[in-house]
Structures are given as C-alpha cells and as structure tokens.
Image 1: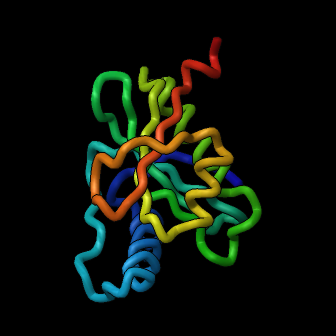
Image 2 (image 1 turned 90 degrees about the horizontal axis):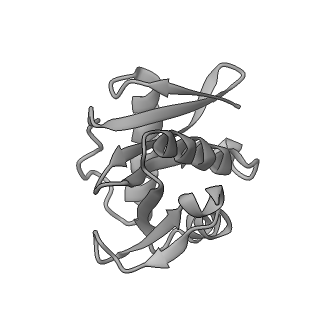
Image 3 (image 1 turned 30 degrees about the horizontal axis):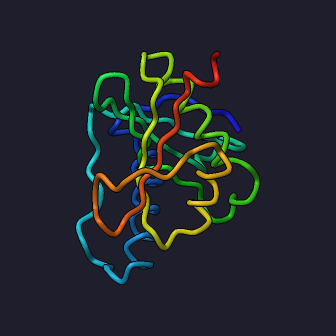
Length: 146
C-alpha cells in the first residue's frame, strides 16, 4: 500500500471518510445524521492499492506532546490485510516527527475489531475523554525509542 499525505479537501479523502461515517452511523442506528466535515488542523493520510484509495487516517495536535489519531478507516473489501496497522504506524511516525510522542484516540465501544487492532498495536486503555459511549486509548512512543 502506498501511503501519502492529502489535504483536508481531497476528493478521495472525502469519499473514504464519508464511507466511514455512513458505516459507523448505520451501525449505531443513526443513519441520516450529520456527516464529517474536514478540518485544516488535521494531517490526513491516504492509503492506495493499485491507484485506488482504500484507507485513510489523520492525526491532530492536542496538548503539548500529544496527538490524537482520527478517522482511521479501511474499505471493507480490503480489511484483514494489515492495512489498518500500516496506517497506524504511518500516523504514529508523522506525529512523532512533529514532536508528539504521546498518541491518543477514541472509538466506539461496539467496534470490537478496531479495539483489538489498537490493543495489538500497543495501545493501552485510558479513562474516557470524549463521548461517554466511547473507549479511549493511549500509546507512548518515546518508550519505543529508549
């Protein structure tokens, strides 16, 4: 998979994030709710396979030294191939290069496969900092550098 930076208004990014939001909202029984709007303060990555955008993710600067991973998504037909883990590593590398060695994220509690991905990628559960129905995770990348 080729991973590259994309601007917030990139049409391939918009298509991936729209697909992600539809999937999440449908699973939560909230179809028809407001969809994602891009943010300029998020660094977005796209993963392509055979010139087709199949994965995305972003990271956003938070507190000093902290980044939050957001909008991680892999199209259903491409899941189970390690692409989500590749996106996580790429996002972590970018955040670390920007001086953000602590990575946090939150996800819906019913997304067991995603939670498993985060746990097997070295993330530890932390107290919720967002939506009370979500679970939050953190990984300290500086520990990997020692």
